[in-house]
Length: 411
View 1: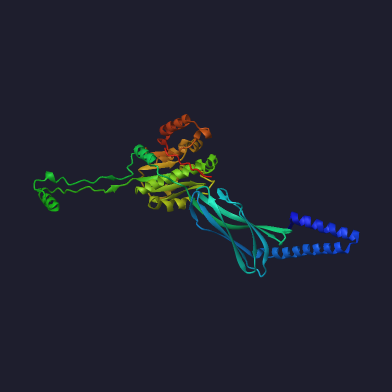
View 2: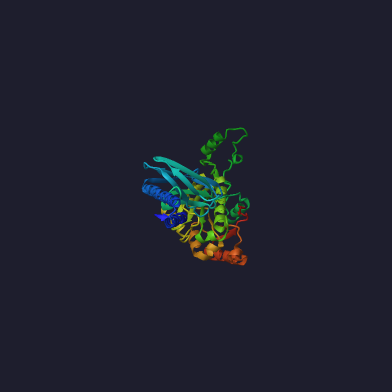
């Protein structure tokens, strides 16, 4: 049990008035002091009754959606259940706001909970970063009606919301990727027509099947048309987000924000063209892989981002992605490997790790870095140029910077 500032002031006033009434022998003042003392004792009794029922309080959370877009607002609800036979006269509910959320005002509520009943409070929160946002602790403060005494309790009420990054069309960057890697993301038709003009028996309007079988009967050579349909490339898309990137930049335009937006834009571009995409996200101590992510780009990215807490990031070498892929035993051949990273992370980790990853698709591994003000982070364009040369010479990896500006304006 603790006493509030108002409780201290009230207790002091009661004590002083009682002493003064006794010293002055004023019966009216003495009766008033006695009344004030009874109020204080009643408040203490009510508080003790309420605090004795702390163990009978249950708290749960809810949200209007567990999957949202970055910068989208979600409605959160807290339900408090009183399973005891007596009411809670005054309960203060304080929700601890996680990082990368914005709330209008403060999520603080004062409620009265009757016996055997439930009370709900709700508020809106805006999600300011892609990844998993964890709502966990709620502070409950039990007080008497006049808030003279209080007892606080921290309860766990976990709820996770996964936010997908914003995205945009990146046609210019994607055309550059096609030119550099030599892949044909829009499909490569290898089909052809029968060369019937070289067959003597051919007459316009004749049945081609009859002509081909007759030609086979005479020559013993079977003509087969090679039709592979629309041949689509198989691409491995690797997203490398390091923890320190959340501190580079400002507001909702940190390097981590922009890099994740670039990754989703690439994934949407690839899946929209029907390209087979395997998606890998490096999260804290292990990479997570989603095979055939292009089939449902939003669902696959949501599944992987639910393991990446906003504000956290990869803490292991990027080369471990290759080891994880080998563990799947797929033996898939990739026409290109696209790594969404940035020059700062590559310099910190070293080019050797990228060289090991590039062994998956030699000569067709490309690092796609977001457009960003790297000078503010102490990296000049000359430094980036030197890094690009090192990557090519030591790892056989090409470095390119996306042309689109993926920053957003947010008030």
